[in-house]
Length: 119
Image (cartoon, helix red, strand yellow):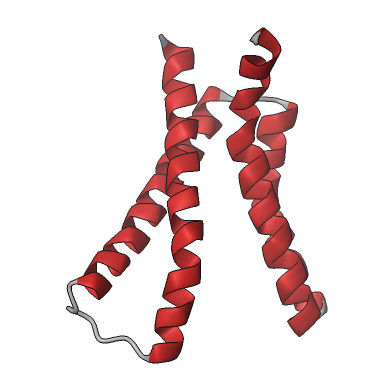
C-alpha cells in the first residue's frame, strides 16, 4: 500500500502527458510537421517527473484549474442556453466534456499535492 501511495503523486503528470501525446498524434496526422510545437507543452510535466519543484507544481495546478474552470463555465452556459451552439459544436462539447472534467480533477490533485508538501 505504501508503494501505491508513493506513486500516486505522478498520476496527474502522466495524465497531462498522455493528453499532450494524443493531441500531438492527432494534429500530426492532419497537419504534419507543424504539430511539433505541441510537444513543448509537455516539458513542464516531464520536468516534474524528473526533478519535482513545489513552485512549478503549484503554478501548473493553478493555471489548469483556471483554464478548466473557464471551460466548465462554457458548459454551464450551454446548459442554460445562454449561448446558442451549432450541432457540430455540441458534439465537440459533449466529447470534450470528459476531457475538461479530467483536466479539472487532475489540476486540483496537483494543487493538493503541492499544498500537502507545504504543511
